[in-house]
Image (tube, rainbow over all chains, first blue to last red; front, side, top):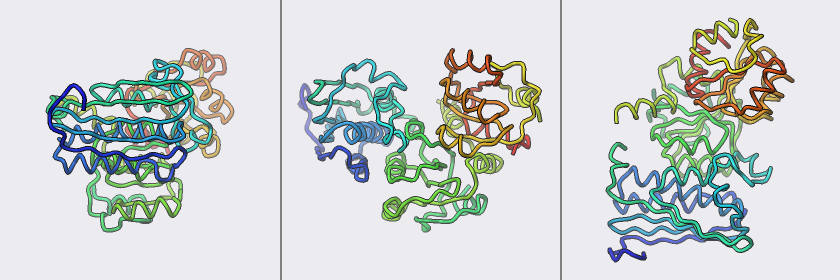
Length: 153
Length: 124
Length: 111
């Protein structure tokens, strides 16, 4: 993990296949279990798992392929979702609640209500987006450990 | 209220996770929109839904939902049932519409996710 | 029970369609998938939803629903309220969630 030389406690990476709705979410569930076993505080695990799931669903819904990874050190948990896909044309718009470019089929599944990225922003401590329309997207979602946010969970 | 009592109240069939029927439901969330469900992160929540695809089980795992009840007689496919069985996640199905299911559970004193969040915010 | 009585008992806000508060409520439906509402709801029912876009007015008018309650403090779009007023569709709002709203309606005997 860059700009932090604290020792890495956990690192996992899962490939994600675009359009694979049956497997979708499996990586996030495995990441959640790994975080629990690594002793990460429960409230942070829930937030991170939820963000991982939203990010994973975005890869499945919009991209051709990608990966979902988690890294943990004593200061931070970081979820990275990257993909080869259409990229995001307007990042601000994409983070607007309710804005969605999902197909009718995806909406019928109950997804595509335009809350994925907004939900990530709500639950994460930091979100960084790198995207190139026509090529793909990289989402870096960070959580500070031992922050006051998780005390009440 | 434990899941066995929920089953009786809603006259529901158990499709998977029968071994988990002793679990307690603390709050109830009823929704057919995954985004709504994902906004609720209270553990101990019972989900009422008409959505039957496997993502409902993944969501239940991510959010630590205590069980999923399909309303309007909705039947999940074999993959959904299989995934739930593997996880030990109770899946139930009731013929009741969402409206009646919510009404009955509310009358037994179960709060909704919105109420529970409001209470948590007051305590914090 | 009429819409007006329901408004008072539950502390709901009337946002549009003030002319038809005397309408009787004969049952309830809760849901956000329009296709499901079209298929399953019945004339005279109260429809509890978080959807706030103008299409909900068309659905309510078509199915002759008594009233729409938009929950969770969601603000109906201006176009929704305008269309509702035009078409005589009553739109109410509440900060309560769907489950609590339905629960209270059910306890009032709306089912």
